[in-house]
Length: 348
Image (cartoon, rainbow, N blue to C red; front, top):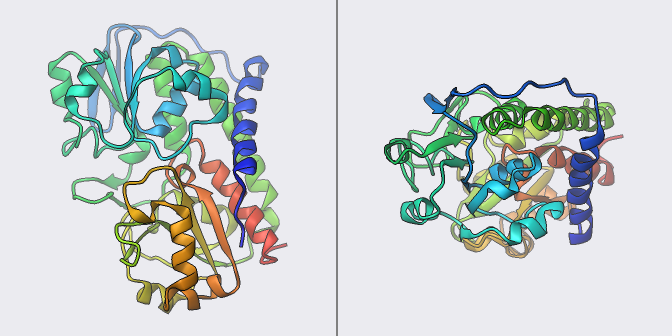
């Protein structure tokens, strides 16, 4: 079993954050011109025009919040919501000073009470046609701009009530697109290009580190959470961020449907008998199985799950939940998964 310690997790985050700060002196990124306003951005099917750089932003979703911090825009954040775990280590002190409107979904009223001129969202289900927080036109009526992470709408159908359906595997490209577009909106394009360059270099290094393992075909299940501990689990579908992580190493997802996080029975999972199970670690407690310790106990004691090859051979990988969503942490997921397979002796 691989269970990265809190210390190793923190070191990973620190290393990532340190790379961000180190890049402030790095000159490899192209020189970016200042933003020319008014600026119109077409975002998830909606055109949004900015007359000037936003002064106050409410960020819905940890991924978007960490991008804003990484661009040096922490002083613009008036409130946050939708958190899965601790913020990246370099931003802990700055984040502690910012109002957290809710751990999960905030109300529309609590968002507009911060008087933002921009609201960003990691998920279209919070800020879209079926937005739980609000529809984009509601904010537009109040002269508040909106921006949704492209990774959650590109090649993805969010019209249903679930987590959406992806028709094509997501990559890190829409994550880089979000960084560049937010950098342009806030007139910090140079920082955006520097951040993208550093992440692309790190992604290339991560892929190269597992190049020798690409011949392996390890059947794998990614388990995010479950509404009921003994109920059907939310597992990674065929085209989400976990699929991208697996594609970098040559592993095979045992789930073959396009839903982002479909549910399936443990009996169905047993029929595929995954060689490795990756489980999400998070501080969120929306569902009982959000707790990683609850997941581990279930795998060890459930009559069906305990007989899976991954469990019997102690091939359980604990991974940060944010890495399992399209985010700047997805590269962490590639690194953690590759190191785990090497530790299990399943790749060279």
